[in-house]
Image (tube, rainbow, N blue to C red; front, side, top):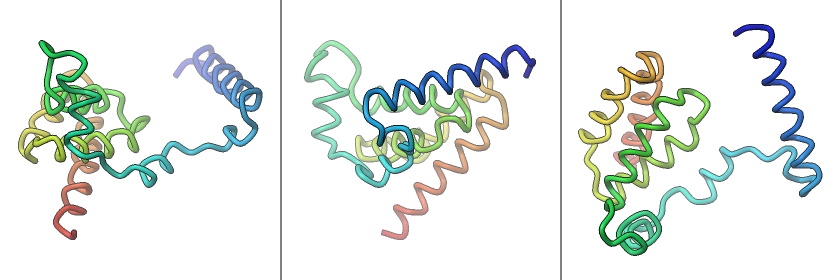
Length: 134
Protein backbone atom coordinates (compact mmCIF):
# COMPACT_ATOMS: atom_id res chain seq x y z
CA UNK A 1 0.00 0.00 0.00
CA UNK A 2 1.17 3.49 -0.71
CA UNK A 3 1.73 5.97 2.09
CA UNK A 4 -1.12 8.11 0.76
CA UNK A 5 -3.53 5.19 0.82
CA UNK A 6 -2.41 4.23 4.33
CA UNK A 7 -3.09 7.77 5.55
CA UNK A 8 -6.46 7.87 3.79
CA UNK A 9 -7.43 4.52 5.32
CA UNK A 10 -6.38 5.72 8.80
CA UNK A 11 -8.44 8.90 8.34
CA UNK A 12 -11.47 6.89 7.22
CA UNK A 13 -11.11 4.58 10.23
CA UNK A 14 -10.79 7.51 12.65
CA UNK A 15 -13.79 9.20 11.05
CA UNK A 16 -15.84 6.01 11.41
CA UNK A 17 -14.89 5.68 15.06
CA UNK A 18 -15.81 9.31 15.69
CA UNK A 19 -19.17 8.78 14.01
CA UNK A 20 -19.76 5.64 16.09
CA UNK A 21 -19.01 7.59 19.29
CA UNK A 22 -21.49 10.28 18.22
CA UNK A 23 -24.27 7.74 17.53
CA UNK A 24 -23.64 5.54 20.54
CA UNK A 25 -20.43 5.34 22.58
CA UNK A 26 -20.85 1.57 22.90
CA UNK A 27 -20.52 1.20 19.10
CA UNK A 28 -16.90 2.30 19.17
CA UNK A 29 -15.82 -1.13 20.40
CA UNK A 30 -18.40 -3.11 18.43
CA UNK A 31 -17.04 -6.28 16.87
CA UNK A 32 -18.94 -7.64 13.84
CA UNK A 33 -17.91 -11.18 14.83
CA UNK A 34 -20.32 -10.90 17.77
CA UNK A 35 -23.20 -10.64 15.30
CA UNK A 36 -22.26 -14.06 13.95
CA UNK A 37 -22.85 -15.52 17.42
CA UNK A 38 -26.09 -13.60 17.88
CA UNK A 39 -27.73 -14.91 14.71
CA UNK A 40 -25.86 -18.05 13.58
CA UNK A 41 -28.43 -18.72 10.83
CA UNK A 42 -31.92 -17.79 9.72
CA UNK A 43 -34.67 -20.15 8.71
CA UNK A 44 -35.09 -20.72 4.98
CA UNK A 45 -38.56 -19.12 5.15
CA UNK A 46 -37.12 -15.96 6.69
CA UNK A 47 -34.31 -15.81 4.11
CA UNK A 48 -36.77 -16.31 1.28
CA UNK A 49 -38.86 -13.46 2.65
CA UNK A 50 -35.92 -11.06 3.01
CA UNK A 51 -33.64 -12.10 0.16
CA UNK A 52 -35.83 -14.18 -2.09
CA UNK A 53 -39.01 -13.76 -4.06
CA UNK A 54 -41.35 -12.20 -1.51
CA UNK A 55 -40.38 -8.63 -2.34
CA UNK A 56 -39.04 -9.33 -5.80
CA UNK A 57 -41.26 -12.04 -7.25
CA UNK A 58 -39.61 -12.00 -10.67
CA UNK A 59 -36.12 -11.87 -9.18
CA UNK A 60 -33.64 -14.34 -7.80
CA UNK A 61 -34.41 -16.88 -5.10
CA UNK A 62 -32.66 -16.76 -1.72
CA UNK A 63 -30.18 -19.54 -2.59
CA UNK A 64 -28.99 -17.74 -5.72
CA UNK A 65 -28.75 -14.40 -3.92
CA UNK A 66 -26.70 -15.99 -1.15
CA UNK A 67 -24.35 -17.70 -3.62
CA UNK A 68 -23.80 -14.30 -5.23
CA UNK A 69 -23.18 -12.83 -1.79
CA UNK A 70 -20.59 -15.53 -1.08
CA UNK A 71 -18.88 -14.64 -4.36
CA UNK A 72 -18.75 -10.96 -3.51
CA UNK A 73 -17.51 -11.61 0.03
CA UNK A 74 -14.83 -13.97 -1.31
CA UNK A 75 -13.44 -11.21 -3.50
CA UNK A 76 -13.29 -8.89 -0.47
CA UNK A 77 -10.90 -11.31 1.18
CA UNK A 78 -10.07 -11.41 4.87
CA UNK A 79 -11.97 -8.18 5.51
CA UNK A 80 -15.26 -10.09 5.42
CA UNK A 81 -14.60 -13.28 7.39
CA UNK A 82 -17.57 -13.14 9.80
CA UNK A 83 -19.92 -12.11 6.99
CA UNK A 84 -18.68 -14.92 4.75
CA UNK A 85 -19.17 -17.57 7.44
CA UNK A 86 -22.69 -16.26 8.03
CA UNK A 87 -23.48 -16.22 4.30
CA UNK A 88 -22.27 -19.83 3.96
CA UNK A 89 -24.52 -20.90 6.84
CA UNK A 90 -27.46 -19.05 5.32
CA UNK A 91 -26.80 -20.48 1.86
CA UNK A 92 -26.81 -24.00 3.30
CA UNK A 93 -30.08 -23.23 5.06
CA UNK A 94 -31.49 -21.93 1.76
CA UNK A 95 -30.63 -25.22 0.02
CA UNK A 96 -27.16 -24.65 -1.46
CA UNK A 97 -24.96 -27.73 -1.50
CA UNK A 98 -21.39 -27.74 -0.27
CA UNK A 99 -20.33 -28.26 -3.89
CA UNK A 100 -22.29 -25.21 -5.11
CA UNK A 101 -20.70 -23.05 -2.42
CA UNK A 102 -17.21 -24.35 -3.25
CA UNK A 103 -17.79 -23.78 -6.99
CA UNK A 104 -18.91 -20.21 -6.27
CA UNK A 105 -15.76 -19.57 -4.25
CA UNK A 106 -13.49 -21.19 -6.86
CA UNK A 107 -14.99 -19.01 -9.57
CA UNK A 108 -14.02 -15.92 -7.59
CA UNK A 109 -10.31 -16.80 -7.72
CA UNK A 110 -10.26 -15.11 -11.11
CA UNK A 111 -11.44 -11.84 -9.56
CA UNK A 112 -10.16 -11.86 -5.97
CA UNK A 113 -7.03 -13.93 -6.42
CA UNK A 114 -5.92 -17.30 -5.11
CA UNK A 115 -5.26 -16.17 -1.51
CA UNK A 116 -8.80 -14.78 -1.19
CA UNK A 117 -10.23 -17.98 -2.66
CA UNK A 118 -8.14 -20.18 -0.36
CA UNK A 119 -9.19 -18.22 2.74
CA UNK A 120 -12.86 -18.37 1.71
CA UNK A 121 -12.64 -22.13 1.15
CA UNK A 122 -11.08 -22.58 4.59
CA UNK A 123 -13.90 -20.57 6.17
CA UNK A 124 -16.55 -22.51 4.23
CA UNK A 125 -14.95 -25.82 5.26
CA UNK A 126 -15.05 -24.75 8.90
CA UNK A 127 -18.79 -24.10 8.54
CA UNK A 128 -19.23 -27.49 6.87
CA UNK A 129 -17.32 -29.12 9.76
CA UNK A 130 -19.66 -27.42 12.25
CA UNK A 131 -22.58 -29.00 10.37
CA UNK A 132 -20.94 -32.42 10.62
CA UNK A 133 -20.44 -31.98 14.37
CA UNK A 134 -24.06 -30.97 14.96
